[in-house]
Image 1 (tube, chains in turn orange, purple):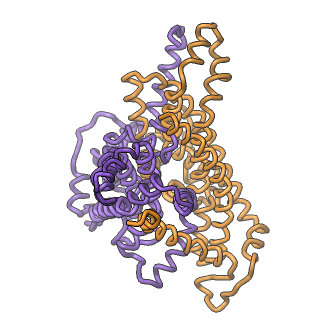
Image 2 (image 1 turned 180 degrees about the horizontal axis):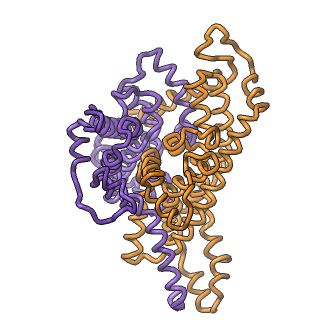
Image 3 (image 1 turned 90 degrees about the horizontal axis):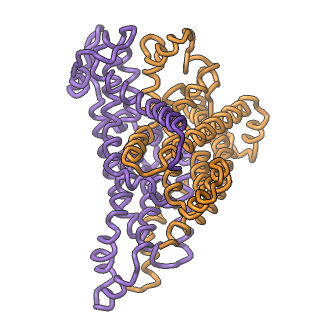
Length: 292
Length: 285
C-alpha cells in the first residue's frame, strides 16, 4: 500500500469524528448570533452580537460568571492544597502508602452525578449522618444544599471529595519521578527541610502541579454533573454556573440563541486555558517519553 | 527524611487518618445504608451495628418497589443494562477507530496527523453542552435522537481522545526496528500492524480501554440530553430513581452502590494505568 496514503486512511475514522464535532460547534456559533427561541419560531432571525450584548448587560449573567469563578477558585484552590498535602504524606512507596493511594482514588472513580446523590443522603436534614454529626457540636440549623447561603459551599464540598484524588495521584507520580540527587545532596549539607521543600521540591514539581491545576481549572469552570444532580442551579441562582445556566436557558426557557451565547463565552475561557495546557503538556510529555 | 521527630510522625499519621476518613467514609456509609431498612436509617442517633437486610437489593433486582402507598415498577435494572451496553460498545467502537489512528500518529509524521490529534485533545476540553445542545436539534432532524447509535456516536467524544492519546504514547515507546525487520521479511503492512505492533502495545490498549469504559460509565450529561428514560444509563436513571423512590432511602443507597460498584472494581483492577490515563499520557505513573 502507498506509504503516503496509508496514514490518512488510518486516521480517516478519527477525522470523521472530528468533523462530526466541528459541525455542531459551528452550528452553535451560528445559533449564538440568532434570535432563536423554540417557542417563538416566527421571530427567528440573525442579530449578530445581540445575544452577547444582552448577556453582558444582564445582572443574571454576571451572577453566573461570579458563581462559576467562585466555584472554580475554591474547588481548585482547596483541591490543590489537599492534593499536594496528601501526595507529600504518601510520597514514599511503602506498602501502606500505596494501598492508601489506591483507596483514595475511589471517589474519583465515582460518577460525579452519583457522588452528589451520596452527599444528598448524607446531608438529609432528617437522618443524614453529616447533619447529625454537626448537630453534636451545636449546629442544628445547617441546611446544606437547600439554603441559598450554604448551597454553593455544599456543591464545592462534593467537588473537593470527587476531584482532590485527581491532583493527589498526579502529584504522587510526579514526586516519585523526581531525581534523587538534589535531595541527597541537600541532606548531606544539612539544608533545612523547609528550604528543601520551597527551593527544590516545589520548583521541580511545578510542571506536574501546572498540568494538574490546568486540568482541574478547565473541568471545574465547566462543572455540570455535580451541581445539576445536587441543586439544578438553585436555590434561586445561588449555584447557577455556566453550563447549568445554559442548560436551563435551553430546556426551560427554550432560548437557543442565548444558551449558545453563554456556552460560547465559556468556550473562550476554556480555550485560552487549554492553549496554556497544550504548551505545558508538550513539555511534560517530552520529558516523560524523552527519557527512554 | 529519615530522622523525623516523633511529634512530626504523630502529626503525619493524624493528618493521613483524617484524609482517609473524609474520602472513604461516604462510600462506607452509603454501603451500610444499603443494607438497612428505612426504620433503621431514620433512627437517631445513627448506628454502625445493625441486623443487615437484603430487601433493598431484592426490590431493585426484582424491579418492584413496595412502599406504604403501594407497589411501584422500577426501570433501574434496565438503566444498569444500558450503562453496560453503551459503555462496552462505545469503547469497542473507539478502539476500532482509535488504535489505527494512534498508530498513524505515532509512526508517520504527516501534517494533518498533528491537527487531528490536537483537535481530539481540544474536544476533551470543550464544554460538552456546546456540542450537545446543537446536536440534540440536529439529531431530531436526522432521526438519531434517543437511539443507541446516536448515543454511542456521542460517547466517542470521551472514548476516542483518551484511546488515541494513550495508545499513541505506547506506540511511540516501541522501537520501529522490529516492524521494519518484519516488513523486510516480506510481510504486508497490515500483517505487521496486527501481528507485531498491536500485540506489543497491548498493555496500553487494555489500559486505554478500561479507562474509557470507566469514563463512559460515569458520564451523565450526554444521555441526560440525548436519551429518553428507555435509553438512559444508570447515572441519569439514578437521579430519576431518587424522585420516584421518594423516601425509600435504603433503595436509593442500594441503587447508588450498584451504579458505582463496576467502576470502583475496575479502577482497583486497573489502578497502575490510571495516572497515565488521567493525564492523557502526560505523566507516567
